[in-house]
Length: 607
Image (cartoon, rainbow, N blue to C red):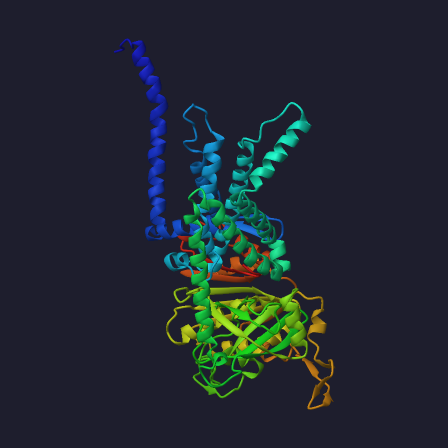
């Protein structure tokens, strides 16, 4: 029996015919989604979210040229900070007369906003600051924020200066350019006689020079110039800024900067006295902080000094070295990573058979690597200025007096990771070697559940292996059976593989000992007969390392949690970041049972 459909019925029927099939599909899709979720571990969803955050914030990067990289966390902080200051600079800038963005409003306000930032900018530039204490972020990580905030305030202050010129009563354009120029010059000379303006101009000139020398090319190539200009420039700027803002009742934003700076200097002086007390007559044994120098290669100097019994550090930490006889000024402090490991366990000559047979050897493998357990060791890359002078001292194997200020910086806690991977280039082992050794010690003591540790090192010549060869031998021999150790060394130098495996002896520059010329013999170790290469899990190859392939292979083999620590050039750091992006550390990998990967990046160069 048929019934007549009204127009409304027809419209409803057509609509339902369109939407109901779609809703059926939505229901099926939701069901498949739920089933899919149960294929994964729901407990790993928070872990997948954390890994997405890590990849987006710290492994997605903005690469500027070949040597400058900003991760997305730094980009976000920069954009947010600039936006914050600009919003407060231009909000509510409508005058009583109704003029929007009145220049008198924002020109003065922008200067006060910039002035208010200098206490925290100063604090972030010091080694001992409250921000690090509260956040747990080391001073070297905060140094980027210090530079970014300073440059942002520099921009704001120049906007303030331009605004003051434009809104100045003397800035009244004349019909005739010459008349205007004479009028402006006379008025400017009268205004310039004001002490507050002179102080402000002096401060901005000093600030401008400071910003120029703080650019990375200058800071890296002529660090000493940056060091001197930074010290004097900041002092001139803050004093000038204090007197410039005093008339506007804004100097209360400036003087705390002097307090933070003085507090940091006081703490550093106390640390210097405590850690170097033998120099100050508090204890007998003068000269205990004298350092020996030696050339490891044409561009690397090894600095060694006896470890004071009261001086302790953690793997990966840095120290500031003051060498009055080498530096231009006696109070110059230069940062270097401590390449040795503060351990009593690894200094024992006893070793364990990694096969688990339980037999112990009394093999003495310390040799030239003894300083890695007994002394403070620093590997110094030679550039210009201070390091070039240090190289001249090392060429004669001279002894220098050293004041140690430190240790500074955090030490990575890798005890909870199932797999630990270390990637280094050249002297980057200053960071990765002690952390690598600490993992092995922690496993031996039962403080770590790590099951696999991988050490990847790219070098420019086979001779570099001699720097740490016996330290690596010791580490492999001491590794318990439950820990798999893999050492991959890549020789990227120009020597062919055949040449690098030759064993020969060549005379070097004669030296004088007890008045008698002595010919020094330099040994080139035979890699084929090397004890290191004979150990299980140790492999040396010619050519560049395929970090992308190596890291992806380790991720595919790993389960649980995995850490990757890298110290090397920008190219090495970039390659590691790229390799650990999506999909390697993506949510699908984590939900499927893949490892959660944490990346630690230690950069070359000065902060």
